[in-house]
Amino acid sequence: MSDPTLLVLASLSEGDKHGYAMMEDIERFTGLRLGPGTLYGAITRLEERGWIKPVKADDRRRPYTLTATGREYLKTQLGVLERVLKTAGRRLKHA
Image (cartoon, rainbow, N blue to C red; front, top):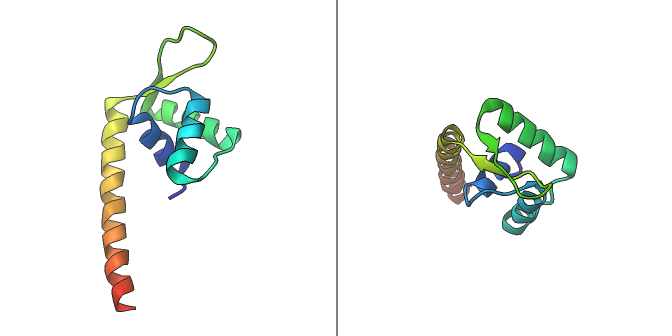
């Protein structure tokens, strides 16, 4: 899975993070390194959709948090991915 939208939401499901912390977290749990343009493009789209929002920070870094709507979207997408994985697993056994 390499969809930046889902990766950012999955990272924020653990707690608030700023961009660089998300980038590091995503690399840790996927092995993929999102470039700054990809990451911040996804952050912008997620914020526009209301799935994440910035939170107050004590320094120049801007942390984000997952909104209730974003959490529900992530849960729905994880359900879809689970069905895809189960189906693919069953089909591979018969291939």
